[in-house]
Structures are given as structure tokens and as C-alpha cells.
Image 1 (cartoon, rainbow over the protein chains, first blue to last red):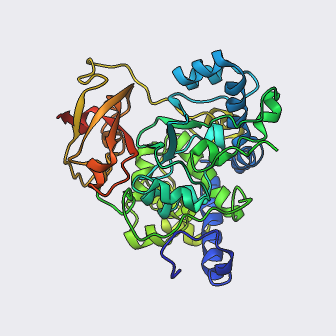
Image 2 (cartoon, chains in turn blue, red):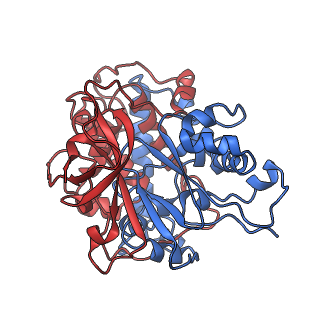
Image 3 (cartoon, rainbow over the protein chains, first blue to last red):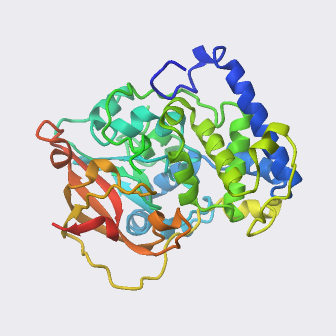
Length: 211
Length: 219
């Protein structure tokens, strides 16, 4: 544990952490047993939560919303006016809670979302956040050096593009609406959704380029 | 509280390291921890603000050196112990040893799962009109409570512009401490990076927070 940042994803250290992980694993199991024996939780319900996040809720939800906005100007306007309400009208996308705000990237302005205080993230649209989003380097630097952060992702923006960082400090949630790449004219929503990456909806990436 | 969780603008944590094809959970126990926190919260053991405060209250060296779900677990353990729901001795023994405090909404079962797949709503009716309007210049107050707050340190004392009014919401500063929802107007306030970080800051950068009315004063 000598490193100065969250490195649970760093495979080189797994052996080193083995005993600690086992201890955590045992205590987690013990706590679940206690909660079950006391009648607080049904373990099958916990299984169902885990399964939902592993199989149903992920960035595909957000990608479909973005693709729809790219092809339907009236939906795009409704999304920017009130994202929770607009997404509620789409039967085929996961339900979404209140206070979702969609922010649009333009040639003049690039948006990026962070939660400096914890890990607030639009779960329903993007699934559970990746480790880097919740870890100290991103949370500390995004509000001060977003271009440096973008460089870590291999993204360079024009020098005069305004960068707007949204720190999710309350129960509002933010979804970035990336710019539609050139060369995708006439594409179906389904095909467009395939190029909308998770990171492009956080603002740390761009959609995949058209082939 | 001025804890290490309040990281905006700190230096020295190194590069952001994206992990290609990252799994949803890096070990099965991570998913169990996430599910237990969601389930116990949904049934009323604690609200979201109290669970955040529990994590912020971990010792700073533990907070900084633990993985994300390890933090969640350590905070959950402490929290449930403090609430009289699951004692440390019981986790040590891996069995229930004494009666636990009642859970407000009863046992979390499979039929409750769908309900928690949509975020709860934190909007509430306003008891008074909003003090600020879009375009107003406001200053983030210099407050340093020992209790939970969602006003990050890096904006305190700095002025910005009200850009959006997001309605009236549950106030985390009281809700985290069992002092009621105490709904407050919530504003998106945007700051110029040079006001936050000085003349060397990126001149193209603007940063916004969502600030509750009690965090703000007219500038």
C-alpha cells in the first residue's frame, strides 16, 4: 500500500495485498451473514442488485440518449431543457431519476464532469463509475488542470476552447452530450450509439471517429 | 468537515490511470458491499448524506490508502455498529449475537430491488422564494463546519455567478445529522478559474458547483 493513489486496479500489487483482501472478503461475508440472520436483508435481493449493475445498467443507456439527440432536434432541445423529463419519454431506455442535466459540447465549449467530494455520477445513464473517476488523481485535478487530465486520456483540445467543469456537489447529475463526429451523416441511431463512449459522456473522451 | 475527501485542487496524487476493459467489480465482495449499502439505505438505516459523512469520517490515512469499496465497507461497518444494527463483535464472530435496532422500512427483499434502480428524488416544496436569481454575483461563504457539508473548500471566499436555479432540495448539512430535510434552494454557481487558482490558471477554464442557498451571500 505504498502508493499515493487509489490503485485497486493495479494488478502488480495484488499479491502484495492478498492477505488484506482476504481479510476484507471475510469481514464482508461476516457482515452479510449478520444482516441476514437479523432479518435486515434477503441475500437474494443483494444478488439481484449486483446482477442489475453487472448486466442491465451501463453506458449503453446514455449512448442511446446521445444518439437520439444527434438525430432528433426536438428531442435534443427537450433533453437540454430537462433531461430527466425528456429521457422519461423514451420507453426503451432505463428509467432515470430527477435532476439529470445534459450539457452540450460545442466547438466553443467542452464540458467535463467530476465529483470532488465523493463519487456522484449519473448511474442510470452510465452504470457504476470506473475506479479512476472515484480516485484521488481525477477528483483533485479535474477542477484545476482539466487539460492535464485530458492529456492523461490522450485527448487534446484546441487552445481557445472554453473548458467547463461541473463539480457534482449536490443531487443534480450531469451527462455530457458530445459533438457528433463528421462523416456520420445518415447513420441510424443504433449505429451512432456504438461510437458514443462512456468517457465521451463524462467529458474525458470524445466519441469514436467514423471509419 | 475539512477532511481529505474534499480533494478539489489538491496536488501530488499523480496521473489519472484509466483501466481498459475495467470490470464492474474487481472482486465479488465489492458488489456485496455496494448492495448492502444500497439495501440498508433504502430501508431507512441511514440517508445518503449520513452514509457520505460516515465515509468522510474515516481516519485520513485510511481514507487515502483504501480502495473505493474498502472505504464503503469500513464506513458501513462503523455506521451499523453505531446504529446498534450490527456490532463489531458480531462481525468478528460472523454471527448475530444480540437483537438489532429495528429497520424503519423492514427487511430488504427482492421486490424492493426495482425501486432502488432509480435514484431517489431530493426535490422538495419551497417554503420561501429563492433569494438569488440567474446572473446574480454571489460569494461562497467562508464556513468550516466540523459536520457534513457539500461546499468544497476550493470555492470558499470566492465569487461566482448564478447560472441555474435547480429547485429546492434536501439540505445535506442537516440531513446527514438527523436534523431534518430542511429544504433549501439549490443554485449552479460558476467560477472563473483565475478567481479560484490565481493568475496562472487556465484562462479558458470555468468551474461550477451546485450550492445550497445557505452557502452563499451576495457579492
